[in-house]
Image (cartoon, rainbow, N blue to C red; front, side):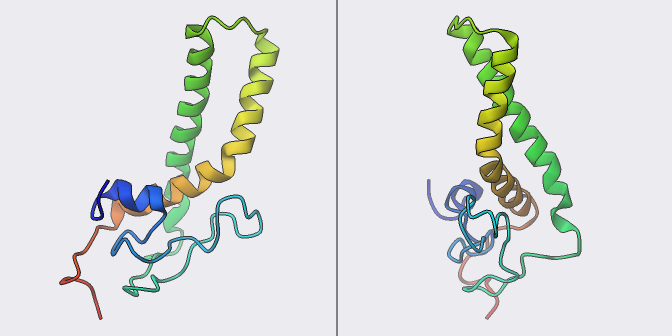
Length: 127
């Protein structure tokens, strides 16, 4: 995975523009700052909040990631022929989802940002 790809920015939680500055204030499991991102990049000074309510669209990404997680676990249990009562499956999947929800939340924000914000080479960055 090389710098300049959207996947690089998403996995490393870096600025969608320069892939060097941090996007989030803290890690996903710091519940006081969960999902809080900087206003501007510390390296290229590009803004992460182009308009009020920009990140409301990240809810669609979060829904898709949560659904994919639940379906993957459910199908995995079926494929592995693990016999579990329906109630226990629901409780187990819900517990996993609850544990991973801060990560899903931050992933959805950085994915949403990378959909609309594009990498700029060093020649094209603002000074």
